[in-house]
Length: 183
Image (cartoon, rainbow, N blue to C red; front, side, top):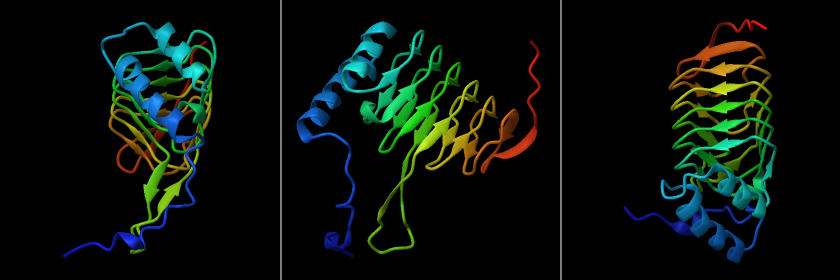
């Protein structure tokens, strides 16, 4: 069975930069950010800022981080982006201060409407507020807000907002308890 590609209608999508900038970022990302060759976080932060990312002070970006469009992301002071994190920033992603995005996590702003034969692209922003911890191999889906100091545990999938000072686990992630911080 052949698919009629003329049905696909994602012409409305604008990645926020021209084709030359996107291609240039593709190669910079491949060789300097999504790589083990250059382990220097300061260089990665510099390159991300050069391409329009808003990044605070003391941000740690580990090796093999894959960022789709840096001009769509902001990262607050002293946040940590772990190894193998994929930031699929088709839309805006706002990461607050003192946030930890652990290794292998996915921040996904895009999906497809499987109910339509045209399989239309759906794009929604992600907001991760201050003090949030996204566990290793966890997934934050399009349109999700992770409120202040919430935790999404290892391998969990956030399909709805995460309440402040709460811990979520599972697929789909469910609140399992409150997060009580000790000063």
